[in-house]
Length: 278
Ligand SMILES: C[S@@+](CC[C@H](N)C(=O)[O-])C[C@H]1O[C@@H](n2cnc3c(N)ncnc32)[C@H](O)[C@@H]1O
Image (cartoon, rainbow, N blue to C red):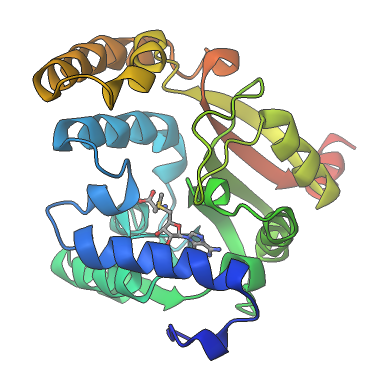
């Protein structure tokens, strides 16, 4: 399951992402909190710390669980959210494409004293079949890295297939409200929010809540310039816009959904919602 042998993959479109994430994990996952492996590649530590805080602010209500809640963390990386959920008493299964991410998640869970409530597996979300269902499924910045539309739709089907009756899926993804392609790359695609909503509906999932994450007007204006400025100016500018952005996100981030580049989607199976309304 953890193999990087090309024979284990059906196609280049399956192989390329795993090689990319594995390389990134080998380079950065052991460093400090592992944020360079799972947040913004090539950005300074303080900026990744900021990303971590904005994601945590959006996810916080969904990181509270009753003891024994079963949670699936898809694309778990170094287990940032899995370990928090396990500390809160959840029984967590984390899956990730990259064997080194999984090894690092296991190591960190043991270090944090939560290994007994965590299991981590190497698996492709688009083909996931764990033979069990979960009360809560969480996925943080994972679908945005599945470029191929067919695999993207299959991944959402696999999420639905692993959801227990009455459970919730919580996804945090780059999902701007209007088309913005300038940040798309060979490993990232910013699908518009309506594309996500249409894919959820097709899979029998209903979006019961959508929240904003990091609306940051200053940051959005500055980031395209960052790579082109002299290093000192770029870092000073980034520090300034980050410091200005944090209070905006903390105070209004969740409510400024339409202005947010990232969104938090909370999903339920359509049948569960209609049964509750009936
Ligand atoms: C941006 S990182 C986020 C990691 C983690 N969710 C977090 O917030 O710390 C994206 C993660 O998704 C994993 N990933 C990407 N495509 C995947 C797929 N098809 N199946 C499983 N994991 C995948 C990558 O290996 C990587 O660890």
